[in-house]
Image (tube, one colour):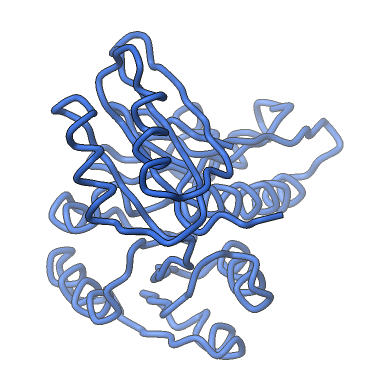
Length: 280
């Protein structure tokens, strides 16, 4: 079966005939459509479409012709099916980074991990075992602004398409986030906002929770409130100790993060307001 080589993502005001107009452009450009998905967000009357196709691509011609047939507010991205370049930020916990490095090692991530940046050296030797650069940028004795400046300087050397927070335990400022709009991906447990602050798993244990979950989301200026990409839960019960719950939380976090990255790196996600449209 012929494999798609390009992905077209469209977000615009809804109107009649959009599917016909878009597929007509691709037909006239002599490419072969492999797959097509559409969705209309009714509250805002926004049309979303993801089309995969193969064949020689004249990007300029396709975008020019689409501009003639789509509403003036259309947001269009045309990308090749290529690996995304990413930088990963970490602190001390290894479970999410480990999942990403293993998938990267076996070419399952659809991304190139160019570097790992940590504010502790805990994961330095672990990262080096996978042949990936590790940069230690300690936050000790520095203001948040100074520390972020140093992290940003190193990250920008790699010109990443995305930044992944693999249990990076520092809050990013709006000034940092603005460099990567909808291109920073975070993972956290899904107790928020029920059990906030210190020792969330102890709080959960003392309340006798029955599920533990995780949420992967794009980072914005509101702490842990950016557009959600993937969520999942696993069951727990009264036999689980606090340590059992913590391990369960780690298990679900690493799988949810990997799933979110697979969707984003496959160009299957669009953002409308503070939520996502996920084509799967």
